[in-house]
Image (cartoon, rainbow, N blue to C red; front, side, top):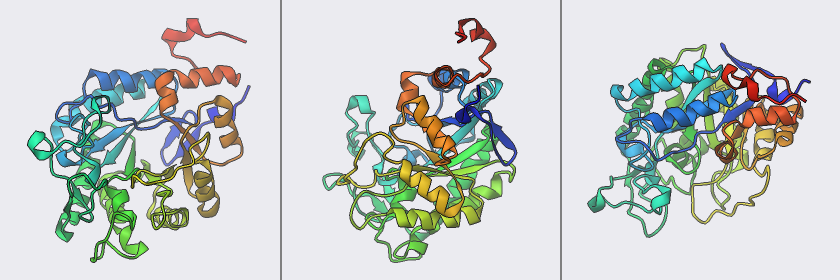
Length: 357
């Protein structure tokens, strides 16, 4: 039986074998930015499990760009050795490896969630955070250092060099993290960006940082490979980034050659008011796709095979991204295929466990 969520999707030179993607999920398990066997098994198991696309967690372009000291990094050529093993294994299972390039901005220097997730101060071994403006995420937190104009341009170049390393490591998709209150999103939102230079004020100025990063990445990234951007479609807060601006941005991103917008929301301010529920972010992905024509990815409390199938059938989005549900079931695509009665290829080593119905 044919299931739309298991139909292929071709983007530039790549063909994803299905529409099920694994979202970037921080594992807080790296040392000095280096990947290890945890990351290999975590990402590799989802390739075995049948996903079409697997995007590696937020990978910092500078040491201070990490959310925590346990995050992955790509600020050094030395980081790429383990990444090559990861990408080679993912490809060997018929999946596509992607990487999310990121900088945490003012939300950096925190503990791992299971250790409380608190802010780590300099005197406790933390690091200085930078941001578009000297505005902390929470009032009680240290004030981040506002970036000088020259430092903004230097950060753009950090993303460029990270893209070169990502290509050398074997990744086939780059996703730029412009969501969840991290650095690029901080520039986009008037709640966190009070700058007076060309990177602040108007919509055009606030999105300039992202657009310059895309241009810089394209200098290193082959035109035959896709670039995604993850955005928060709204800050869920008065006076913040909103859905209309997201549509306006999507027009610019399509013109710039971005292939897909991975549509999430929130994360930039602690006073956000999010109406959380199943599929609560889907309308943003659907609106951006229908009004601009750019491909979108849907994410957020999508937990069932029928939900994913309906999203693709109704053309509300082009990909469906899974995070927590994938943690619960690394073989989620295989599970969904059985539920939808889709005839897909299982790994040879697992075929004897396939139940025919």
